[in-house]
Image 1: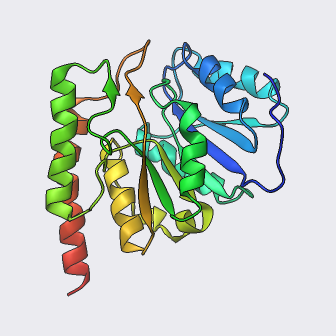
Image 2: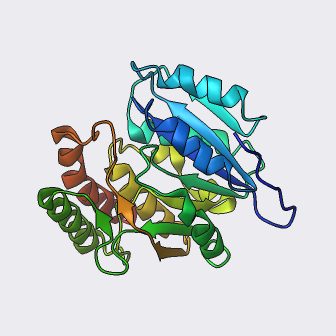
Image 3: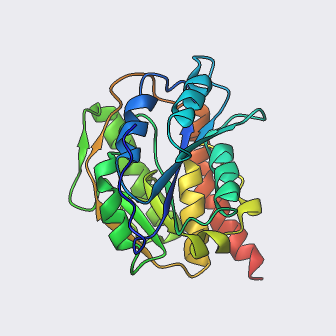
Length: 247
């Protein structure tokens, strides 16, 4: 992997990259990420049966310390992976902590845009819906589901963000430290809604920058009926918890 130049003036970014059966995508994603300066990667593998974890170890050995691997052995899930990664990130010297998908749907070329956004915001979202609909290769059913989900979340919670369910995010370290991580219970894609809700409750400034989201080229989507059910109930749970907490 090529070494990118390091600038002492630029913030140091740590990319949290959860993986589950992403062996075909991970090498390309790692190469694109490590081509950027002032950036490190933490691969959080959830015991992938396709050998993603072992491949990640090989990539780490060739990365001169810029890529590390966390092998999770507990209960699987996107939210649990991110929570373990966030706890680890807070033990590092990273200025910015990113969430990204490993399937190449989040293009690393947008990272500088999110970094610039973090100069004036605590949480920056790579938004698919800031400038109309910026999604490539999704079937109509998936697009309708996603746009409805964002409308549903905004309506129930009052969050004024166009892409509440986005998984491409940048947190300033001090903002991430303000989140009550141990209170987060969502595990699927509603994890993104819960962390955004809690960030706003903690007084974080949230902004969005436009990205183009491209559906994964290889591998299978992790969306299941259980993930969808959790996404339906999570906004109500968050609002009720806030309401009862203030009584």
